[in-house]
Each structure stands twice: as structure tokens, then as C-alpha cells.
Length: 430
Ligand code: EPZ
Image (cartoon, rainbow, N blue to C red; front, side):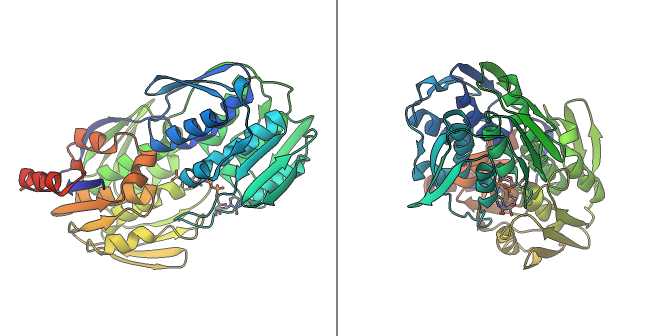
């Protein structure tokens, strides 16, 4: 079983390249099958979730050709099956984006119903509401969503909940519906805009992505395109909080600073110096961090995917902080792990109180989910002594070469697969 072993105490210093956005890539790869022509997608992050999505697309018959680690060619003309098996949904929920893509193109899709996950129940009622509003018959049969329609027609839809997934999924189906679709109370995340831009590069007619109202004029067919995924704002933010927690000086390269506004604002609140460049941001943390109050919100508010990372930084800040998690119902599991490292934390419902301590001590902890796992690595890098992080498969789902990038910044971290390698690490760092 793979683990990360971390020796804390080194400030992270240097420059780190940020990869393509996982959450944009997963939707764009699904949308790529909506044309019978060849689509080239680059700046793909080489992470497990993306590789599973490519397997799912290939499984239904699309041609998938890896050009290199970060570039893939997809051609959907050979798709012969509109059925996405539970295996893929179990591995990555986002394979449900194939619902919108297949329904839009073939007017038929069958996708296993996704279960909950570690951070919450994550219903998909808004996705189904959108497909039904477009005229699709949507039934749940034997754990599978079956969506089909003679033809999809434009509609005026108001989402009950701001949902990234539902906004993207319904946008894909509406892109090939007859007539105009207006979607309100939509998600405005950068990756929603990236998917809209991608579809428009294939000949779709989508306006307003990133604002409160998205207008889509359906088209009969989509064509070839070459497209580059936007940088991953969450990966960038993770490294920025690693700099904050270790009193380091890190510049994240190849980012869109505008996408990081809420994160940068909080880094400044807690006492970091932030310097923005065209496609890079430098974060310097010299003294003790300050406490603050954080509430996660849909974009452009503070991102829920950056909640565990600031939680770790605040565990070392001067004073008491509070975090309110307004998006997911179970995203504080990492606090119990952090308490084992000496943090003074208390979670009650969707809010947590964090009383900063001078130092965390290394311990063996377990990654409860993707972002919390990365945050516990940050805690280990800042702690005194050795930290072992179990269940790092979660982290590998969304961070490419995570330990290599941290090592390039001076972090003492290694992936070990057995006790012998663990002993070697202990000897090396002692
Ligand atoms: C996407 O999940 C991301 N995943 C998540 O990132 C991210 O945390 C989330 O958006 C919010 O930004 C991908 O893009 C693959 P939502 P998604 O639908 O689309 C409720 C990561 O770490 N809801 O915006 O599933 C839902 O329960 C992952 O990379 C409904 O009630 O999130 C939640 O409370 C974790 N009904 C809220 O909306 C629905 O039909 C926001 O969920 C859909 C959602």
C-alpha cells in the first residue's frame, strides 16, 4: 500500500509549474465525443481521474489516442454503446458528464447512478431536472439513469441549487437541442467557462458562461477542434497554502491569477505577501500567520476545494479562526486527523473552530479525500518530525507528480510502498 513519508520543518521555496485543471478536463473529455470528427485536447493533467475518464470513453467505442503525457486525440464517430457501467462511475463520479454528452449527440444515454462520496451525499437531481426540462424522458432503473428523447428542445431553466456538475451536464445536452435554452442560477467556476469555450470551439453557440445566465442556441452537429485546458486553480492554491504553512516563498507558474482572487485575498488576510504576474503568482510567508474567518461559496467566492488547505494553515496561525463549509455536508473529516498532529480544532455541523498552535507534530494520518489528503501533506511539511500519510490514492486522483513537485520546492517527502523503503527514508532523514 503506497504512503507518503514526510519530514517536516523545511520552508518551501522556489517555482512550481501548475498543470491543466482536472475538473475542466473531465468535462471536456466527455464533451469531445459529441462530434464525429477528431478532437485534440492538450494541457491535460496526467492524473488518475483523467485516465479513468479516457478509459470510459474508449470503452463505449470512441477512438482515444494518447499523443503524449498531456495531449490526447479523441474521435467519437465509432461509438457503439451508450451505456456507462457502474465501474467507471464508482471510480470517478464525473463520468456522469457522459450523460449530457451522449444525450446531446445521440438523444440516448444510460449511466450508472453515482453514489455519495466521502465529502457528502452529492445528489444529481438538478442534472436530471435539466435533462427533463429539455424534453428527455429520464428514469432510474436498477441503479442506472436512462435518459432518452426523440429530440431535445430548448427550454428556460432555473436551477434550485448552484451546481457545477449540473450546469456543465445540461449545457452539453442543450448545445445540441433544437432551439434556445436559457439557464439561470448557474455555476460560474472557471472550468464551467472552459467547457463552454471548448464546445464553442466545436461550433456550439453558448453565451454567458461565467455569468448568472447562460444562453445556448442548439446546433445540429459539432466539428473538430484543438483545445488547451485552463490551468488548475486548485492545484495552484494548494501549493500557495503549502508556502504559507511552511513559512516559505513559492511562485506558482502557468496560472490565471484572476481565477485565484478569493484564494489570494485569504492568503493576504492571514498575513502572506502576494505578488501577481501575468501568468504567475508569488506567495511569501515570513512571520506567524494570522487567524481569519472563511466561508466556502460558489465561484467567485472562496472555493470549497481549498477549504482543507486553509484549515491546515489556520491550525498554525495566531488566534482562533472559523470555517463555514456551505457547499458539502461532510468536508471536515481531515480535522480529526489534524488533531492527532496536535491541532486544536472542533467541528460542529457545517462550521469548525480552529485555535492556532505554535507547532504541529508528525503522526501517521489517513487521507479522507482528495483535497484533505493534500492538506494533510501540507501539515506534515510544516510539522516537527515525521508524518506518514495513508490512502494517498485519493491524492493521486487529482495531483500530478505531487511529491516530485513538493520535493522540487525543498519539501522532504517520498512515496513508499513497503516497510523497507520506509526504514530507508527514516535513516535518510535522521
Ligand atoms: C464539482 O463537483 C467538483 N468536481 C468538486 O471538486 C467541487 O468541490 C464542486 O464542483 C464544487 O465546486 C468536479 O468538477 C469533477 P456541485 P460537483 O454540483 O459538480 C449540491 C475536487 O476536489 N447538488 O457544484 O459534484 C451538492 O450536493 C472535487 O476536485 C445538488 O443538491 O459539485 C453540493 O452540496 C470535490 N443537486 C452542491 O450542490 C445536484 O443535482 C454543489 O455541488 C447537484 C449538486
